Length: 504
Picture 1 (cartoon, rainbow, N blue to C red):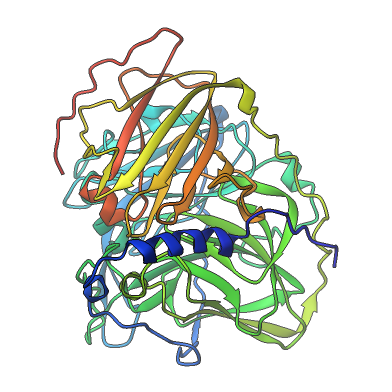
Picture 2 (picture 1 turned 135 degrees about the horizontal axis):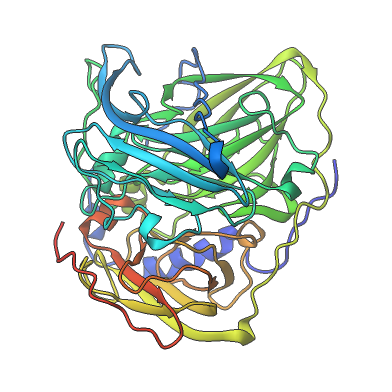
């Protein structure tokens, strides 16, 4: 295989260890008794007998110069584990939704009809688009109503996703099953020798954790430090999933769609994976990694190489999130979990090696930064403010570059997601970021007391009356108020009255 890049600077493990050291020093007497949850170990205990479900590609109507998709949010029943059926929610089905796919330059229109008995939304996570089409808590779709956002797709090829975003209810709506992938294609990515046949050697891997009772019913658990943490892992809604590999190299589009749990993905036999893309698209070069840490909302594309007849398990290993031992157990960071069995056929279709160069990741110019903002996440607040739908927290001028300095001043796990833009990580506590954070990102994990400098550019879309969100993507934290909002305005512009009021 081609040589892989190993960038200098602080490693992923190293920058997480910084947070762990500070946390340990700050622990108060009695903090070890934060909860009673023990670590879970399912290695070798998962009965991999169910064929991995591949979400269908959504039907697209491309007449009239616009690519149109129709989605219906609905309740249903799903047989997921033994014992019976669970009450679940889905899009165009009982659980999860179809994969949407569009090319850069296309104008898309999505018609969402809500057949649920309560209001919901759909947010296009990672997408650059007008605020009125973003699908945040200001675009609620009432029962029986229809919402039809439209925008022009203008960003590099990437694995994005969609999920509900109702204020105060996001964790519950995602947990019940609403969500799916949104794949963006472009000419550059299409010209690369990469696995790309959807469902054959290019596989969606939507990973979630759930808890079921003895009758197979989906149940909500107590929230510990980070929200609901389940004991059963699903991939694309499948428990005990097996994927029958038919090609020498297989591309896995990994999505952490859990509401609270983080995953430290790796292969059970110790072989590395080749990471080719992060949240916002291709890396500049492929990376050979033993582990890929994804916190809620993050994505990564990896290529796995198998020999004929081999079996290997995709596993989540314990993570160093910079937490105390008790909080690591409560948050699921101490768990070791079998996720997906990859079983290679006796004869495999040939696959070319992963290209040594993938994309040009243009670095944003720090000398052109117009504004630097600071955000502290602590106690379900950002900068000591609880989310208020009627308050604009930040006003951004279009066609400017900003640096956001973000840190977790808390001993709980938090991450940070920004709507509308993809950002680049400039530094982690003053050091260069690890290579897996060198590409375009929209969500990043924040170890306690570790400061991140993020650079981003706001282009094209302005609306003084409709905000975008930034928030922790551990969804219970978001629901509790760890979220703020910003508007993008023309030069000299001011925010308009956005209404909305306060509350969950």
